[in-house]
Length: 216
Image (tube, rainbow, N blue to C red; front, side, top):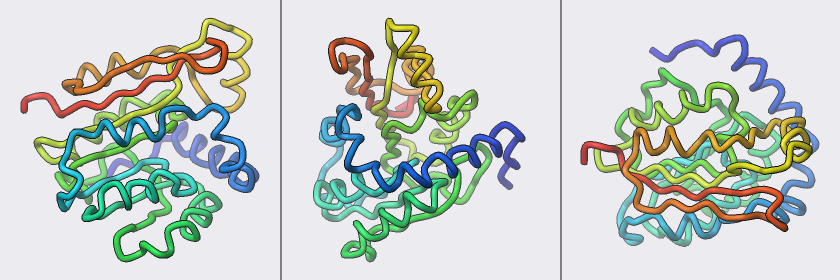
């Protein structure tokens, strides 16, 4: 049985739903400016592209990554989760031609859920974990349950910034930049690819990480 959302998790879920009511309208037109590495992380997944894979994207948004993975992994079955109905409405439109291979779910990814246990070959977080605070670690821990024994996690996200002003600005947009994601990813996964790169003018850094569950 899954755990109930804590009060802080429920508040954050509602905040995200409200935030993306407007953002869904402009998301695809604006996010290319600073959401770097989304194409690169998909190409670093070290699995046979012709295999019949099961792939989950947490925080799938408007479905940009899912549509790319439909073509990159032509025999894969994909699942997308998001807490924003407005973002999922955009994803449903984008992915309508592929509805036989893509399932979209309006729900939070949370610790204690058992319905996905051992199901997925890959779980992708694309600019999602830095917005899940302070319980981002619980989502990473949940992937250990939902991945197959030889499964992979793939993460592309904001990493850190030397600017206190920019850090404060991003915090006002629900994003944490403290270099906090890589340490816990290294704790639970053996990296096959890990990089930290600079965004515009070095104002911020973003990270790319692909790792296999430890013990394999």
